[in-house]
Image (cartoon, rainbow, N blue to C red; front, side):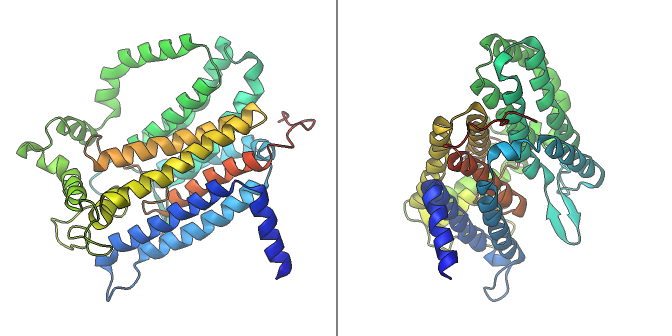
Length: 386
């Protein structure tokens, strides 16, 4: 027992305790909200399958985070070829066997033996590693047209696969990770200007061919959310904003939100995932919402702090990748609940239900902790080898 206790103490001395602690806070706070959001489905107040799955995912994710943080991120990056092949195989499997909501063309989940997995959640973490490794291999000539083109192709492969599965929300995550990591790599600004021009030119094609009818309607409905003609497209968000505003400062109390606990059609839909922030607003009020924002803000700040303390570019790039991944999901998910952004099915890290989301969030934290824990012993021969 003393050896175990000693090992725990040594680990806590070596790791970023603030990032570790707030990640656990976020996961536990999220678990409470998920339990409350699914309580109406239980019999006699018992735990639902969704809440139990969340517990299992948190445990698996936490253990994976600890294990990953102990491995030098250079060693992790040296497996980039394996990660790339596994990612492509998972994308192919998703296209072949993927499924999704009945009212959506999104086919992002694989369900086998009663277990639902969203492969893209894990692939985005692998993408951060492979892209950071790619950057490390070309960093001395990062702005050459050849290298910028190859970095673009690197990102285009997963983005293309995700387009085939019709997951617009996840596509945005990969795009933002790519752009932020590329920007952090000090690529010449002329490439970003060229990319912006290309985006403007292709905007009509993206709108008509990439966005489905549902996504188009949701975006257009945001400009007039209370119009009866938009009632169907805005129902989920109108319910969310109503729940948020009704909670006022302190909320109705945990497990007592009228829309959260209602089993009827007028209740808060997708309350355990897309609208989990609205659950906090209704039951715990403004105070509960501010607590979520503060916890996630601390995590984001630690990403930047660890990036600034990294002794090499690869470590910084990994942290920037994790920062961009978390930032976009936080902004979009909360924006959906506040009715200022369309619903695109992105989870709020650590808070929304979903085993794949919880585990991938912990994996991203594990990568950043690896950068932190190995910041003092980076200058070994061969660290830039394949």
